[in-house]
Image 1 (cartoon, rainbow, N blue to C red):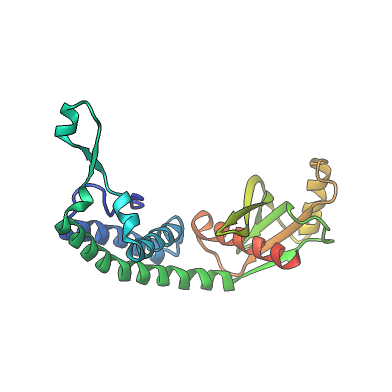
Image 2 (cartoon, rainbow, N blue to C red):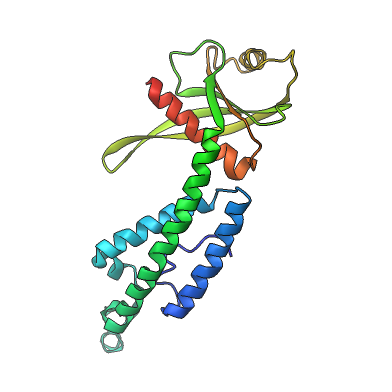
Length: 238
């Protein structure tokens, strides 16, 4: 079992003990992942489900819309399709509310644990420009390095813009370019100059280094945090 289904609350058997069993298995996976300092995909998954539960608790009308519907036999005989909402059952609603009251603090506790790990990893990372800064920072190169600093992973990045709750937000898309072996003679500035010669479509690119002081799981932890750090850095300069 990995991530929960988006509609885990109303999917299948709606029974408190059954849903409790499902959640216990899920949170065991989350805890095992966090103990390995592997934040993703579970951290974003926790945020998604916790926000959904809070919204459902505050607006029961949304909950009704998430239920499956069944055909009314009488209307089917008259060749009319009519959907009857299962949510009309008061016993079902009480069971749902019990499940939500149990689940919310469990999600919150796991989310707090993940956030603590995230902040710790972030505190061990430094982000800095490589060479001269470019006036256009929404596209360029991202270098990611961690101990023993013998290799650097290089990505092309592009900042994207979208709206969330009527507020402009920044996202980031990255494409892996190559892994370069490093030594004292081969500096980050040298690597940047080599990239400029290879990829002439970006003659004066922005380039940033995210350097971790400690070694962390790369794809599950360091890379997602490196991307977020870069977005924050570019946002500050905008």
